[in-house]
Length: 325
Ligand SMILES: NC(=O)c1ccc[n+]([C@@H]2O[C@H](COP(=O)([O-])OP(=O)(O)OC[C@H]3O[C@@H](n4cnc5c(N)ncnc54)[C@H](OP(=O)(O)O)[C@@H]3O)[C@@H](O)[C@H]2O)c1
Image 1 (cartoon, protein in one colour):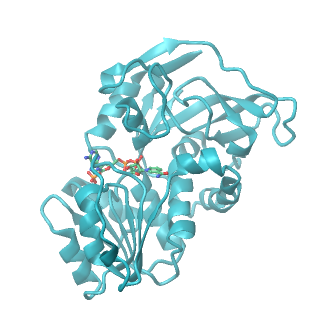
Image 2 (image 1 turned 180 degrees about the vertical axis):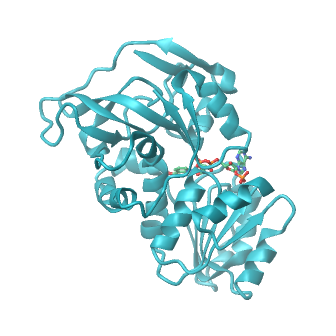
Image 3 (image 1 turned 135 degrees about the vertical axis):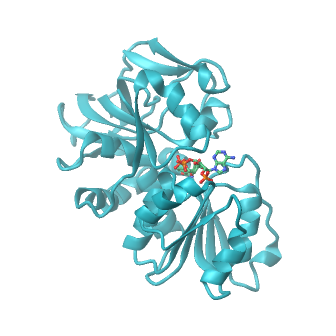
């Protein structure tokens, strides 16, 4: 089969289009012929050797995919050959075939096309876990979402609104991204390039700060975010796009009754995969009923994965970047 391989840790040029064996399934697994997969920021981190769940080169990157069941293990009761599915695979998804444990394969409703489906697993499942389960967002609360024009950003804005958020504020790294976050449903979008987001958020919220912050950037952005988190607020850190950790003091939390939380879908896939069935049951109907529309930025052929990576790394991508297999 054709696949893309990380040949060495490094820049987009280390991605090579190769021929390799079709992976084999065990009795509890499903083989899927991939139609489309997506670029997640974790793939960039994995390519540089900075992702906590990735292996050493050579490896096939990629965390999610949409396709058709090609073969099922002898213990599989819930899937048959030919069904349309999405999955979080065992091996990398930048490939013609992937293997996934049965509990990480989800039936795709007919109405959802493959490109939408491929764009959704990581960002839609993560956004739901972050807002509903980790931050425990309540109707009427205010939310701040960093990197608001990206894959997670455009999805989490829509989901926050669906879950009843009052004001949703986004931050973006350049002016060109403002309309993308507005289109996703943000009430306010702040461009970090030339504006102090803390001051703006406090002004928008009449000095109270926001109830929930989704921070995937860490470093200085994490630290500054605490200056616009309301009493009883919850800041969820779930990434470190900046490459730097953020520091916190216990005095930032105790008297203000605020919480700082963490989440990783990768850890959840590995250690508590059973939690994701319930998430699938919640989020797939949102896609089916078009209550959430995945923002697809660009589509590339699988063999052009290095171009796709260069785009995401440049901070110029919007929404999800999809690879057609
Ligand atoms: N914990 C989890 O389970 C989980 C799951 C999915 C994603 N994530 C994390 O969520 C974040 C978003 O993921 P995504 O796949 O949707 O990517 P994305 O948002 O489409 O792309 C990354 C964005 O991060 C922002 N960014 C800020 N500082 C950056 C830097 N130094 N270098 C590059 N980008 C920078 C850029 O937006 P601006 O230019 O607008 O700032 C960039 O467009 C990533 O940190 C990712 O690791 C975590």
